[in-house]
Length: 129
Image (tube, rainbow, N blue to C red; front, side, top):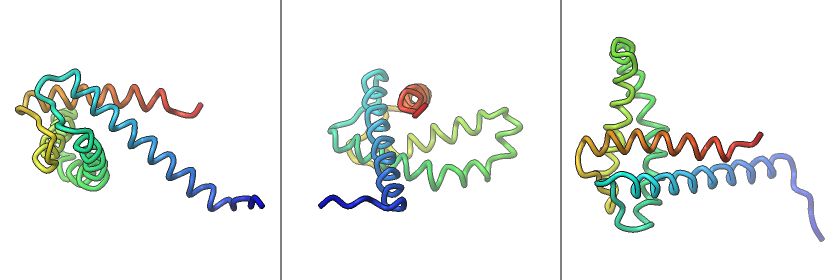
């Protein structure tokens, strides 16, 4: 016998599926960036998966705090500080996650730009319309 799902159960399943799709898109984005940017390197697929998760956690919890702290400086520099926060956090994740390496700060800058552009493109493709 097939039992219908309640609205709450349907919402939970939908939310989990959306989270999984975002994670897969982020993993794919990181793989594209590693292919395009020399010095942006993953040893294994597992390192890519862990990096996508860590970047998600860092962007959710640490990035907003830093953006609030550096908001006055970001206003004065017309957003360059916000961009540098992204670069430093990405570079910091490379020190935390084993198997994920960024060669130098310039590579982190280029990687951050490419990551933002590819991520924006892929997330726009996956939107419901």
